[in-house]
Image (cartoon, rainbow, N blue to C red; front, top):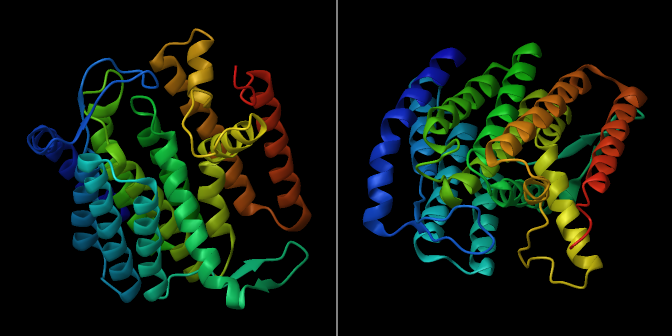
Length: 334
């Protein structure tokens, strides 16, 4: 069934994207070039609408709509509407944040929340009163991580697709079929869209797509944790998205060290640094795909690891990422 979900989502997204492009021009969902951006012409946004439609059609056609799935569909619709409004009207950051918190709250309302974490020493750490705030923090953080990564043609879409495929693989490996099906629907929607979004792109996913993808990966990870009673369901997509997560963390540290507001955009992100080293857009994106694939392979091994060995894998991966970041000067604002 997960293969069918993937194919349905891919076809719907692929066939719908040209019409979404026309809609973007019609309603003014356009990305204007500026000094921070690498494109030099006006580009239509809103591409995430095609990914969303492919995802929803595939889920409705292949899954039994339980309370959990209904919560994910409603929440994803809310985050999509927020993204559409932002792509058209450029919403203030505070409004976007409140909208993201509200969308996260929908999942909590439907019982999709993080109630415990695995203890590497054995047993569980129950969050109790911290369950709801931790869940909302997790969802909002993942939403913004993918959103901040969307700086080059095909980058956010490709890395999200790699993360999704990793989740599918681990879900099938551990027998979590509902998680595999819903993630396959997401992956299909993304891959159907990438043909139009890879360099040279003819349409951007916009905040409509980047926030939707981040939100969905967060929701699926919690859904998997609830169904499997294992925190590994949270860890796998987080490791697979390790590149944008660490890039976001480095950006916060860099801006703080340079006395700048942490939410002020700059050109110090990983893809900016790689472009400054002389790589082309396409080369940078392919390199970041490769890094994400390596991290995803690490996430698969982590899913099989136990106890201290899992901690060792995480520490080694973190050290390698930090050393690589220092090498290319990502902590510098120069």
